[in-house]
Image (cartoon, rainbow, N blue to C red; front, top):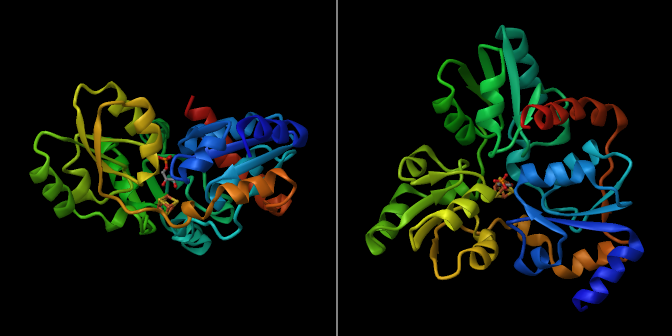
Length: 298
Ligand code: 13P
Ligand code: SF4
């Protein structure tokens, strides 16, 4: 299908296509908006089209539905799910609430709607430091990503952090030794990493940030060579925005993000796909931390 026809189908179906930087390049090329989790949540919350086709993993589609419940939010692949989104439990959160006083439960957006429904505020990698710093509570339970939590903790040292112990299985595969061997092969290259990476990997970074922040850092940097410590889907934007610069990716692909194919997106645009369905009570409870994130992240 050529671009003109694609746009015609979107108009006819009153659909908008949102895509995360980690999905297949051809899928990114079909999207109306490509971005990091925070940007996509903001766009989804304001979308006026009848149908939002969300090219990403399940928690992204769920967040879009919760923030904009009047729209039909459709996932191209029902199985595309972030394993980390389930690495905490409601029981664990409720127990911590009973045991720790003056506690804020901070939920990385990479979490199921069920987990969000018992949390106080959501964050993404691009707003976590700002939002956690603005909280009055002395104690923070940060779920589910312990690596992102530790990164935030280092910048908000006056608070005590507790963790559920989750992690991203994709970023966890990168070892500090992978970075050092790339540095040996490409001396002088800058090291760009996502805060879902391990502490040892983050310690070797020149820059730590969300996918969107990594892309804009690389664009502005005077350096010509970069070791890339995040999912290689960002290469599509990097090639367009950083001509002449060289990137050496060390992170493997996220197989869940890569389940989204152009064919499945087209199927969504023709009325197929998997509509996000959540119970009203869970959506209402999960909306509070998501809306608080949008408010505090401004
Ligand atoms: P960001 O795009 O917000 O940096 O998130 C990365 C990620 O792992 C999404 O699943
Ligand atoms: Fe989840 Fe990691 Fe894949 Fe992001 S890269 S969707 S955190 S498994």
